[in-house]
Picture 1 (tube, one colour):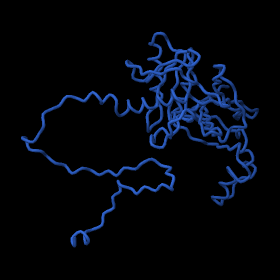
Picture 2 (cartoon, helix red, strand yellow; picture 1 turned 90 degrees about the vertical axis):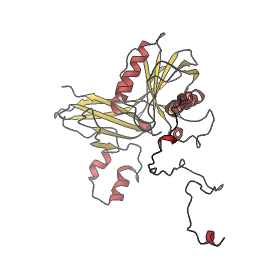
Picture 3 (cartoon, helix red, strand yellow; picture 1 turned 120 degrees about the vertical axis):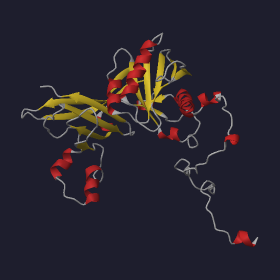
Picture 4 (tube, helix red, strand yellow; picture 1 turned 60 degrees about the vertical axis):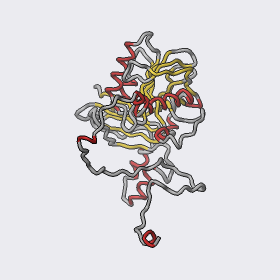
Length: 318
């Protein structure tokens, strides 16, 4: 008893105290350490065992099954309360980049490709998933790419697909924390991503300018791509010399920013002198004039009022 009372105190990080009156806004944390290396004697080693077949239901496959079930339950949210619903979704056994197949409520066959858990969906996955979709029979009418983030080139390739309806669906980060996600059909776990509606024009002085007119979105009720307006654009950025590898925003705009937001707030925070004439223009949807770069391509990235990002790449042509 005396020894225990004088022992060193130890904090058990893996056994937190539960507080019922507080709301947790993050997922659980883990405490890890490098294990101490040990070597067993030859007589202590165990014979090789056969692999457990349950491995197929763990790790990446298990996460994708969970996302598939959530997608079937909630569908994909569109604009104005629209929802793309699925009648059924089942795992595809012989494909690597297409993770499930099914039918929409209207009876059209659809296949789904999920992006990685902690990285952007890349261009190669789009290419290989489209190749697998072309080999299926009957050929699907629609392919949906679901990801937490999209590589700009991957998003561009999805938007450029012909002959098959290719959609981008943003996945809610709540899907990364299973214990925080509520099991209900009203979850907003998947959102349709629109393509920017952009006009690129050359001025009389030889410079170029870009005007953002909104963003296209998929109308789930008609199955057509429709145009959205400028009033839902929270922010947009322009790379005037896109190198097809990385996006470098050379101009950034905040159309929905109020008098105390956007660049005005930044001016106050950094306490710097900014060009007042340019500040007004950086709240609009028309870019500042720019000279063409060596790559002769521009990239426009839009963030709408839901926080959904979309990208469009345009080549400069005289």
